[in-house]
Image (cartoon, rainbow, N blue to C red):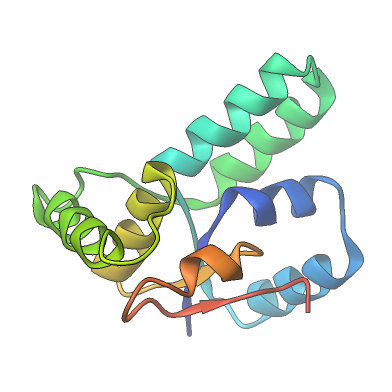
Length: 136
């Protein structure tokens, strides 16, 4: 059984029923893998759907979210924040990524999850982060 943390772009692909992502999702569900949605992803998805007036997709997301497990930025006290600071300091030596991506990476790492993302170009800069792209 694997632990997967879903990034916002993957959740969007699921809501759009992107075939390759759906194949991987169904495989994970068949394997009883754990699917986690970080609170930051919830924020990004709901913010985007509400701003675009996509009420049907918002309803679909809320249903999907209610069946997933949730991870919060402060779930492990300050461990996740400390990991985010560590990632920031590592990245500032080269090229930074957005704070939300740093938080999502930290949540995945602290909770021993593989991050499912299409944002591999940016997130590949985070040392020690396990990630995979379900669009491939």
